[in-house]
Each structure stands twice: as structure tokens, then as C-alpha cells.
Image (cartoon, rainbow, N blue to C red; front, side, top):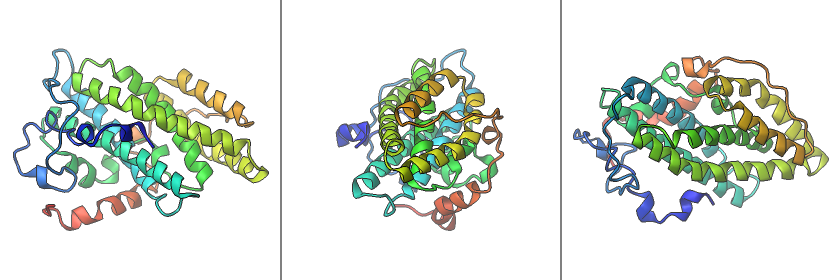
Length: 286
């Protein structure tokens, strides 16, 4: 169970009072937005501070939201497929944490990018080339070992960056990051514990973990181009792989392809599944 589950329903249900300001177009009754939320960020000044570039702030929010949304969609694919019911619930909760982060970040982006778009517009009505997520997030779920290694890498990377963003000059992004740190700490812990269990388990689980590390390694370099947190992430991966009896993978150099809209062939089908109903009924309400 994730840290977000330890909050009361009252705490978790109002994430939008401050972020929803300015949306008087009925979007609060649309696909994702819902109604009646109570916001743990309520009272945070949504004015962009002097000296903060609104375009850069919006771009950062969209990039981080895209990473989270795509990752959440991949984790959702473990529903009915996980090795045990407990792990199915855990992965679903991690996905919900990431979905919550995406919603907050999209809402903030819509406030500051000058378009007034809501979270539905970002999530459901952009094509694959418009998404800015890293490519590792969009790869198919693979086996359980692959998903654990990917979760370990992405949660370690995101946690390191969110720890820095908690001190951002924009108070809304800082508050979102501070909330996300608690969730991502659990995500990393969950993945690390399973990585050690599988790596130090049977011959078959050890083999699958080695294969998963080899499959993920080519996409890790892109993360360090995007955010300069290589030292923190590599330290975590080294500690976990050592405890699991695994070798730290060689990470080839890479460029930030996903951030530039250059994706694998796997993203478009994922988005088609995610966006299909909303696009078929764009004016539907709850």
C-alpha cells in the first residue's frame, strides 16, 4: 500500500481548488476532472512568481505528467496479471499515485501555458508525437522482472528529481513535488525489495532479472540527459544490484529522444487504448 493510501479520503479528494481556478467552461464535469474535490494544495498561491518563465514551467509540468501518465497506464496492465493479488493491488496503487501526480501537473501546465487547457485535453487529445515522456516508460510491460527493474529505475530517477523540485521557485510545482516525494519513496522501496528477492531467489528468477536489466539498460542513458541526477540513481542501482547478486548493467550514452517527441512504436497503441473512449465521445460527462 502506497503512502498516498495513508492519507484520509478528505486529504486525497481535493487536489484541485487552486489548480482549477479559471476553468469555468464546464470541464469540471468532464472525463477525468470530476467534481467535489478538496485540495491539499489549497491556499497555495497559483500566481507564477516573478522571474519564473511560464513557458519553461509549463513544459516541465507536461514532461513530468507525461512520464507519470504513461507509466500509470503500463502499470494498469498488470491488473488480473500480477503473480499474486497483493502485488496486483500494490502495482495498481503505485499507478494511481502516478496518475494523481499527472493530474496535478497537467492542471498546473494549463494554468501557466496561456491555453487554459485542462488535464483531459493533455491526456486524451494529443497524439503520440506531442507527448514528451521518456521512452523507458512506454515500453511493453514484459514479465514481472522487467516491470520491477523499470519501476526501480524510473522511481529512483523521479524521486531524485522531485527532491530537487520541492525547492522550486514556483510554489505549486514545489508543493506537487513535495507530495510526490512521499509516494515515490514507497515506489522505489517496493521495487528494490522485489529486485533483491528475485535476483537472490531461484535460478530462474535470477536469470530473468539479469535479462530485465539488459533490456532496460539501453534506455537509462536518456534519463540522465533529461535530468542531471545520474550519481544519485546509479548509487541506488548499484546498491540494489549488489544486494541481489546481480551485475550493474552498462549504460550506453543516449539523447533525450522522448522529450523531443521521438518515441518507440509502442506509445501510439498505448495511447489509442487510453484515449479511445474519450475521443469517441468527446463531449461526454459523468
